[in-house]
Length: 123
Image (cartoon, rainbow, N blue to C red; front, side):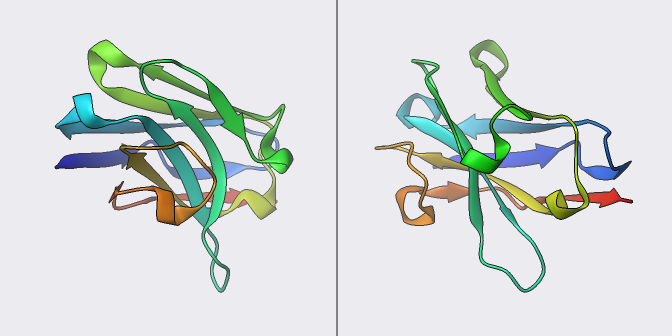
């Protein structure tokens, strides 16, 4: 089992920045990749970014490229999502998820999920 806890969400004005953290515990040696997803009210959960936990390869949804940066600190068992130039449409609950086999863009590829962190971007 892997436990994930997100932190760092909050309220920010458009154009501002936030950094989300995802702290992992448990059987982290079984983690192949960690991804970030988000879900806005009335919408489906969508892929934001992912990183292979030990290799460090990164992937982004097209709309986040250039604004969001994913990174990880293995010693701290933590994955980060730096979000810059935030827009009102970035408002959502952000979830981190861990996969034992792939780091793709679909929710079905991920085995463990955090509880989510609310990000609200005001105009």
